[in-house]
Amino acid sequence: MYPKVEDGMKVQVVIIGWACTILCSLSYTAAFSHGVSLSACGDMTPKHIRAQLQNPRNNYITVHTNMSFYFPGDKVPVTVRSTRDFMGFLLQARRVSNDQVAGTFVFIPPGSKLLTCFEDGDSVTHSDKSLKRNLSFVWKAPAQPIGDIKFFLSVVQSYFVYWVRIESAIISHQIQNRTPVDSSKKSSIIMPTPLQKPTDLKVTVTASK
Image (cartoon, rainbow, N blue to C red; front, side, top):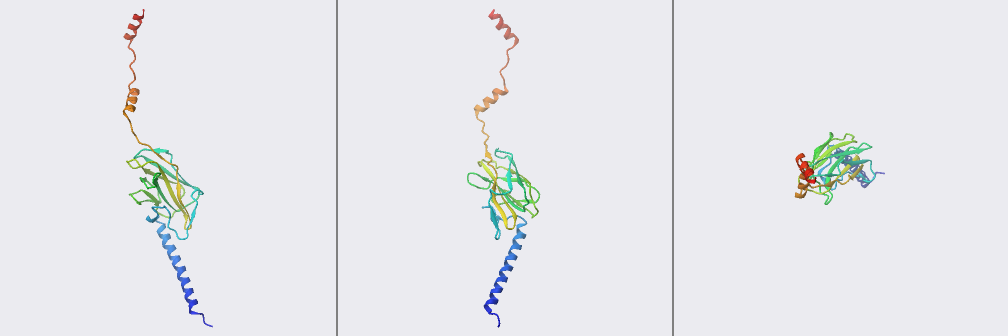
C-alpha cells in the first residue's frame, strides 16, 4: 500500500520546520556573539528563540559601584561580579525618575564594545562569546543635572538562559551650589582673627592697675 500524498507533505513540512529552526538558531548565535542588537536597547531583553527568562532577584551576578553619590561630569567606576561564567551582557545607566538611559561609558574591559542606543556610548555590550565573570567599567555623568541613577545589567548565560535588568544600588545626584553665606563661612575659616600684639597686652595691664 502506497503512502498517502498528505502524509508525505506533512513530513516535508516538519523537515522544513526543523531546518528553519536550526538555520535561524545558527544565524542568531553568529550575530549574538558580536553583541546584542539595537532592538534590546529599550527593554534590555535579548531577543532569543525559546529563551528562558530568569528571576533577576535570584541570580549570581551583582552590579556594584563604590560611590553613593555623584556630581555632574563625575566619572563613576562600575564593577560586575559573577560566581559563574556568562557570555553576553548589556549594561546601561538609567535615571530613577523616568528610566531613561543616561551618560556615557569612557572605559570598558576587553571583550566588550560601546553601543549607541540613544546617544553615543550610552551602553556597553559584549564583543565576543568568550566566558566572562568579573568586569570593570567607568561611566561618565552628563554635565547637566539628571537626578539619581541606577545601573542595569542584562546577562546571557547561554542561548536558552538569561537575566534582565539586574539593578545596582541608587547613586544619588548632588549639585554643587555655593551660596554667599557659605563663602563668608569659608573666608572666616581661612582668615582667622589676628592675635593681640604684645604692646596691646601691656596697655591693658597698665590700665587695670
